[in-house]
Image (cartoon, protein in one colour):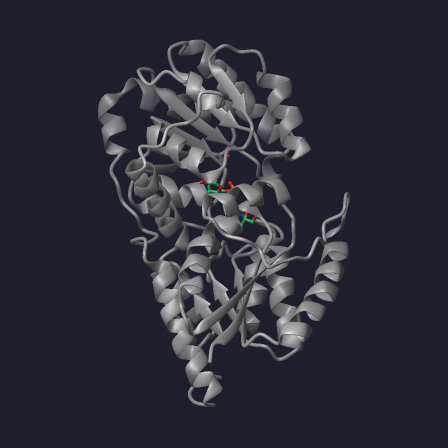
Length: 384
Ligand SMILES: CC(=O)N[C@@H]1[C@@H](OP(=O)(O)OP(=O)(O)OC[C@H]2O[C@@H](n3ccc(=O)[nH]c3=O)[C@H](O)[C@@H]2O)O[C@H](CO)[C@@H](O)[C@@H]1O
């Protein structure tokens, strides 16, 4: 007899991080996995599912244009309530810090269905930064039955919030599972972008700077400064290729295309599926980003990373010396990028491989602990 597990996600990064776990759970006889998607990043989510050969079992289709967080929460709660009532899962698996994750957990809590939280315990200590993510992950921790923090630091954050150590398992981050799996897959299949891909025009003899940026806190002035810095760098380094897959959010699209379109060595391209993006990261000389996930991935690939944010909830990345928080001031972005492009010693220092987020086996650890917990729980044993 198998256990019914419902996994809920909606955004691209959640899907990337849950995909390796879903693959591991789907291979187990003791788990019957049901994947619910909110359809938040529908297009980008489908790319991820295709990359990992996964299918969603239920599309909640809760997103509407101009929706408020409360409107989204109401929709989510109604639809998840119906889904949980129909299926009666033995446990609900949520990830990280989205409104989807917290509401999926709260709805389960109301129905007295246990909750397991993947990527638990990240904290900045400031409920307003990032907002509302810091609150979502802290609130989820209060009601979760099982917590899977990626690092000891995130475990300690949970312990400081009086969460019992018996409910915690440090696993590493599943994003490293996804990354290493995909990189291996690309190498094994000698994968290259198709001739009609925008990546096919890139010159492998030239250095490439990869950029992503989409964080809400950078909208407006922040993005403007980032784009001006990129324009300045592209002009100063005509032999360097600047590749920017632009997030589909219209606020990002307008700023980036408005300020950077039409420059010969800046390649503004659509968001790439995970194969293409891992291929790009693997070939990049350095990476500039405000993304959370890429902060975890770049050190594992040994790529120098400049983070376009003032703070990070992933402080472990800063310890290896390959990641620098540069914020969004134009002169600072230009200065640090120039240093990496011009100073080979500094570049070598910042391109050592280290992976504070795990060894690529986080999903197996999560699956194992989940299964043990479910057995204990069914027998009314140690699980609470
Ligand atoms: C506050 C904060 O930090 N929140 C985070 C943020 O996630 P993020 O910042 O990591 O999001 P992105 O940068 O969108 O995704 C990154 C992933 O996407 C891949 N990628 C990228 C570009 C592309 O063209 N193709 C791709 O495949 C890339 O390799 C990587 O794995 O929001 C999530 C909820 O939405 C949160 O849970 C998460 O904590």
